[in-house]
Image (cartoon, rainbow, N blue to C red; front, side, top):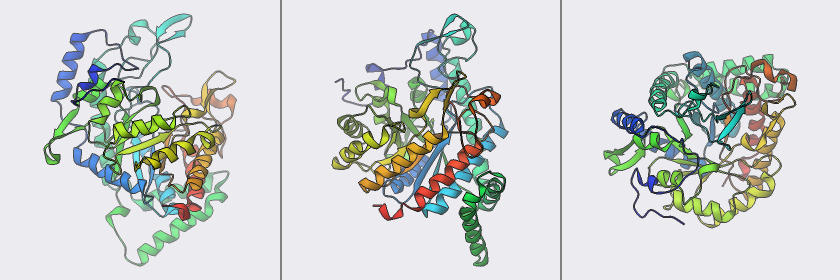
Length: 453
């Protein structure tokens, strides 16, 4: 196993790695990363530490995490309205989850940096022509012209600028009144009234309304009713970008932080402990996410914990399981037991999206709502049996009315997928499916408190 004895922001370059962008112009890459390194950080180290504290609460069963957003951001679909709709659906889901669980819901968006995607193949065939695969707008373009598929480091600068604009808007939404809990509840009431299964959620919606009415009667007017803390995350896939935005924080003993995002994560294709992505992340002070799947062994998950969180710091490491509905009940218990036996205070999360992807009869990549909820249900059952807290869920979703995933209370049928299939890569839950899922997960949470540690 390759080991770099001393970590530096560029020590990852000494190791091999998967998913390399294959930049064809070394000089252009050097110029771009130099300019990025001179730009202001996108997030502040203190914000990352605040999130780490919040995730520590989730590791102890004192909070629940909702992490969600686009599979991949694009330059072409960026707008204030889209951001507002995506932010709105996360707020709605979080309000439902917090009310039923009785614990705070930590809100994390897959946004402001989710411009790159790992791919299984180097090429794809389009209209009979073999092209380099689309890797996300930070690397190349989804256009089918050969020159558009060429990796261009200048895309990283455009990604930075869009991320900066995104964070500016999100901070305004979170603190400027848009996130007022009374408005959020009114939005949920609209969903309950118009949903074909709205009666199923009537009791939860009524309970939230009564709680808000009680607080008004008591004169309770906490700032927390009118604003929220909202954090951002993305997969730390393009390490040239991550390194360029890594800064030392003088208030934390000059420790290094990846200031491109609050919570970078490493994916299943890049989580080998002897390769470059894990090497980079082990040295930054941010809270980290790490994807694991049904092929991850107990020894591997403990090795990842040792490498990414050797000090066993609560809130430092979140393990995000992406097993698939058919495998989570069989494969997750051994991983939970191995991590617990090794004494790592991780936060557990369920990604029910990536293990449940298939190709529809019409040839589109899709997921079924029942499979997504089924994996979450089994994930909760595993934690119930283990006596551990099912810390959160990680979803690919949008506030737009897309038709990318099958099913839901207002079901999308196979023949309807093409109607508005807008994703740049993987299929997302639409707004109604997302809120439907939140109400169903809330029913699981409502029955779960007795099993908290």
